[in-house]
Image (tube, rainbow, N blue to C red; front, side):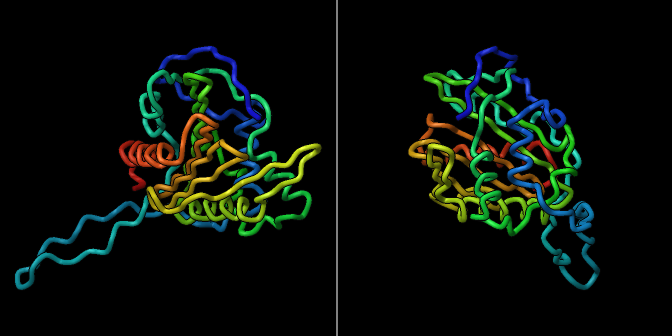
Length: 247
């Protein structure tokens, strides 16, 4: 289980994911979700093109739907703010300590329970600009951690979502040393381009959302119910779409 100390930060502070070894949670999240595959050579999607002007003998020329734009960085404004989570939440500067869900998924992989397919994009392509986190502390120990990954294309973000989902499908029950960890996908398709909600253990919730080329997850711990988590997913998507051109 993750624990947090309660050193407050300014409300608009977003924790940037440092290099390997500087933040166990961020590194583990990248390893658990994106490791094990080489990038497929996908170039960033082209920006949407303006519609052609109407000709003299026809009406407006129909255009194809704009394709999501790939990203090379995540701005602070793309993250949730404390008010999105509820009254009493604040951003904290301290890193989460202990093992999150990624630890159990890694055990599942190493034990051969899951073969790791479909593989996600190679996590080695991530940087402090494209793999970032924000940590929130709320009332009654309602802790939340948001991770986001900006990818060069929407296809690679789809890969990441597919790999994460497969992990929970194959690792629904994981035998740890002296304990058992469980994951159950509760619902899918309620926000963004893709989304799903996972119950971790008996009460904790994990939220996963894709908006264009951004893949995001929020570890909501035990302070949220499913309806509240799904409503929060809409805020995750809205923040990403308002702050980036990927939607």
